[in-house]
Image (cartoon, rainbow, N blue to C red; front, side, top):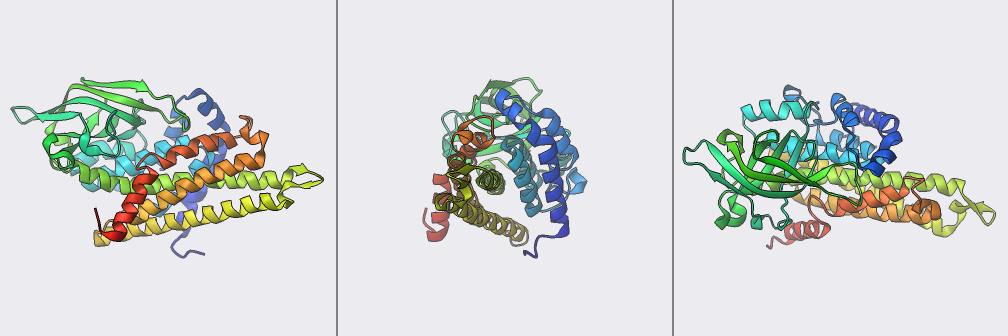
Amino acid sequence: MFDFITEEHKMIQEAARDFAQKSIAPIAEHFDETGEFPIDTIRQMGGLGFMGIEVPEAYGGVGMDTLAYSLALTEICKADASHGTVMSVNNSLYCHGILKFGAEAQKQKYLVPVASGQKIGAYSLTEPMSGSDAGTMKSRAVLNEAGTHYVIDGIKSWVTSAPYADYIVVFTMTQPELKHKGVTAFLIETDHPGFERGKKEPKLGIRASATSEIIFDDYQCPVENRLGEEGEGFKIAMTVLDAGRIGIASQALGIAEASLEASIAYAKEREAFGQKIGQFQMIQQKLADMKCRVDASRLLIYQACLAKAASKKSGARYSLEASMAKLYASETANYCAKEAIQIHGGMGYSKELPIERYFRDAKITEIYEGTSEIQRMVIARSLTGLR
């Protein structure tokens, strides 16, 4: 149907589907219930190449494109969005940023082990009092008199994978008076003095995806661990988030597809008033609307993937396409999960089925890597040229 989906794309999609259904789906309920981090299956995903799909083989990855990443991530998230969150952060926010902005030595040291699944990477932009407005962050990085190290102090919050991450791309202020233009990015090793993992967040959904604060207290970061130049951090963060939004859109699509497939199966099985509930027009309407939104989300994601591929040649940003995909797919995930509960009735509300987990997992896709409100702002600004 789509000539840009090759046999190689289909192969990685099938590999991800097979692994997700055989190895992740059976354990998803347990890890959601306990909130434990599924380190064993995460390591297996790394061994299969899912943690660095777009990274060239020379740097430990698979060397495929964004579409391959999206197809694989969607399949993982159909089984469990928590596993998908770890995969998304590793690929989109960590590996993509170092691949695009890192020096060769940084790629060898910090990209290869994460892309190959030996280590876990994370990304830290948000602070307790700084979310969408990154120019107000309070953390600081000050260059020492010798010019050899930055001394980092402060607290970062809502850092996905932080409790288990080996390396983290951290954004902090080097020139606070410049606000957004004073943000700089650094590559942090979590086993060094001055770094501490803070409280683990108790979350509504994606509970097996470990999230916590990280605390810097006189952390000595070598100058060679600066990612890009001073003051380029905000540009790096926003560029990386464009890629990340394709990942979250794919995650949302996986949740929406799982909700739809479960609803179709239940509508064909459950009987009421002497017939299958799928024969009732109101149930049919729900299924039809879910299907239309799922397929529309998929097409927007494909468009974003192709726009990102084109940007490698043209250098143009693909913010509009990424934001459109993320906005619509995330709202579709929430719509489909809600309707799936309604179709399943009491069973949808029960923890005996994964439907209520889909509902809880879906909500975060409208929040992280740019809220739906931020996505609408990005889209509108792209249309009008106004700021």
